[in-house]
Image 1 (cartoon, rainbow, N blue to C red):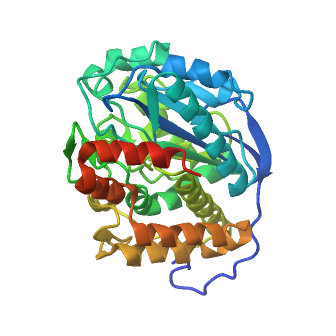
Image 2 (cartoon, rainbow, N blue to C red):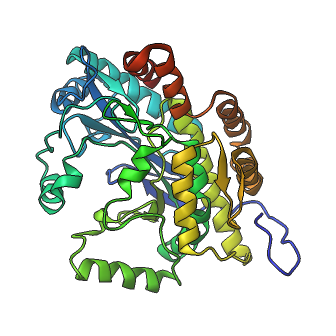
Image 3 (tube, rainbow, N blue to C red):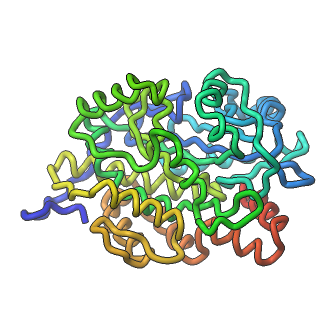
Length: 396
């Protein structure tokens, strides 16, 4: 993996790490660092008595804002008032990112309890009771007016990892390479097996639901920045989307800072699992940037194959097979091993190898969050699922 086709394997030099600012989501805080990274996570708010989504986001935001350890810019409203979003500042390394994630989860967990609800880091609500209201923010109201049925269904929660790149031109080249590995991230991050009180049969039902928006799912290949800009402009001109924030590809260029945003993972049950995903994404971007500079040949991948691989990953998680980059069904462990081999030099250069590798090994032992939700259901029904999710969300 990662070698040129039909020629000598290039010798990897130490990574050139761009001194570029990165922002988490659309926040206003940034940091200049080497492959700096920002993370945003969406959480559900569940009624403490019923386990149903609770429309208490405004109250929880207010309560969290009273804590001296929370900046008001780090807590945002999400699409529905039963969701809340946490956004880290730009971080220089995984330790810093993990510290911010755990701090924000603890603060929001305490705030939720004070408002009679519970913070839940799961990508779909285990139980629902009809469509939720939409938050009053203008962009959310506009989305509801355009796509009322899709937007007003019970909400789903993802995470976003933004990694700095030197400029948008290189960012497009990085996207072309990172996209090939996103089905593996979908499988590893699966945390949404339940919907409306039933097992969907999918490990990541959120991935299926998220793919129904007009510009969503696996992203296409681009012939450079000009091609990317022209195709995005066509989407805007035809009126299918109103602005670039409605581009819901699984990875995209940030419109606010020179960075690549990877958006395919479900929100992670544990904070350290979010750190693992962040480390994997950062290493993928660093590897892609290195390969771009070295002129490593990019293998072709038909869009239908990438779409099929993504759907298959959402269905099985790590419990069965995955579709590899050549279109072959292989064991999930084999495909994950190929990913780790691909990014191993970058993990070493970034100083993340020990932590990320240990967390991946634990994932293989314990299974995905979807696997753990199903085990909890087998032990004690949906109440046990909710209790497990809430406990794991703020666990240290």
